[in-house]
Image 1 (cartoon, rainbow, N blue to C red):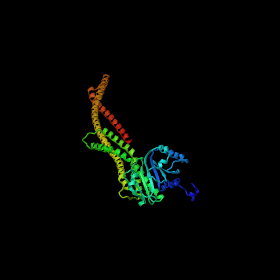
Image 2: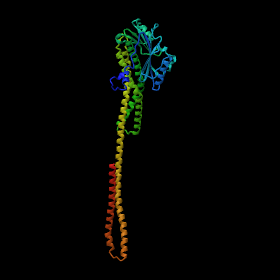
Image 3: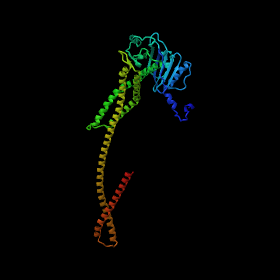
Length: 445
């Protein structure tokens, strides 16, 4: 940072100079009249951008100039016979080749691209989206041709014409490709300075470029619209099946179908979201530049604004509607998925309730059986205990201990049975207590 830039001793933001420079990174052209302009807009992948810059640097070397060390947003270089301006955008790079040249033999006979090295253009990577020529004539030094002659310059195609900047210029075009594979614009400068003309030409160039990039999404929208209609019908049928309580559903098959639909929609969104968003952004730029043209009508012809709003705006709306259709379909699939999950959960709860009821019935049966077995066990243990006691009494009697054996056995039977029952009951209570403690521990954890 220079001391003059920090004369007050203030702490400056590190990006301050970059922020100032950004406003001047793409200056408007200053164009004389007459002049010829050829314009290319080349769509590049991220992998192709470095190669494209290397090819641009090779042009410097072909004309004996020092190429730039680093890539930048905008380069404007004078190579003597022509001047070239290169602008780098988010997804494309544009080249504008300009010559100051009178055209004595008619318009569009030759163009500035012919001045470039033969192999240089072929070496540029990427795919060309916009390619057109702009002929600028000075209506103050040469008369304007009649409409029949102008139509001949455009190979007899239907013309679109207007008087931009409140009539200070006359613009003719067709918005079509001609025999050389390029578009054409013919501009007559009536009362504009070089700066005004440069700004007006820049707007025309951006309108043509951005409308083509805006239309890139239209084939994609047309491709997906029939499939989206089928998806709508498929989802409607699936929802009707869910709503029909009488029909027995194959929930696994429905879930699989929903997953496949959701996967297709998300893949489509991933492939189209950027393109549809870019279309809206490019369309906004086209409308902005059209408003800045300040056109007057040429009798009997569509103006550029009328042509664009009649043809471009419906195409952009189609793309926007397709994007919204995808978003709505995604939300609807989510809602149907929620319905399916709710129905599956309800089915699981119903199965669980049936299972619990069945377990409860089995538990009651087991408890009844346990009580039965418990009674039989008391009887069996008591029987064997009394038998042992009988042997003990007989042994005592044989040893000389005299007592009434029948009375002793009669008294022993209820005592033994009661003792066995009491012991069994205590064991049962102990197991129940242990079971409750385990349940409480599980609930606490």
